[in-house]
Amino acid sequence: MIEGVQTKKLRVIPDERGFLMEILRNDDAFFEAFGQVYMTTAYPGVVKGWHYHKRQTDHMTVVRGMAKIVLYDHRADSPTQGELAEFFVGEHNPILIRIPPGVCHGMKAIGTETAYMVNVPTETYDYEQPDEFRIPPHDESIPYDWTRKDG
Image 1 (cartoon, rainbow, N blue to C red):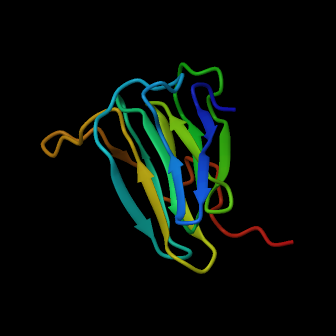
Image 2: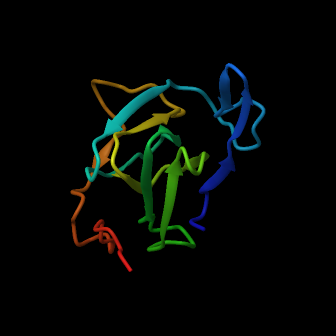
């Protein structure tokens, strides 16, 4: 596992009306701070990434559909520098991923429907000076191939 990355199996509480799923609680062992909550979507087969933050920790999950969330540790001072981690997240695997500052991440919607990702970052988005740094999704500096692996 990449240094500082943590996962949490999400608790789904079903009843005859539907279900409730707890995503992030302030009594979770890794909870730091609340910045905001946002949702983003990706259409089937679309890759969104890479990006990373210098200050912000992300807490990501997929609440509808399925996505592949991939992390790459490019932090020079990390004991796991150069490591990749791949997670399949969504309706069939409800987990939360804690992504520390400096870890590149991206997502790809998998399956046949739009993936809905919810993120709870520790910082509020600053429109004037965003803590967001981008790397193209197929950049050779990150040793990852986004294509589907059949077999």
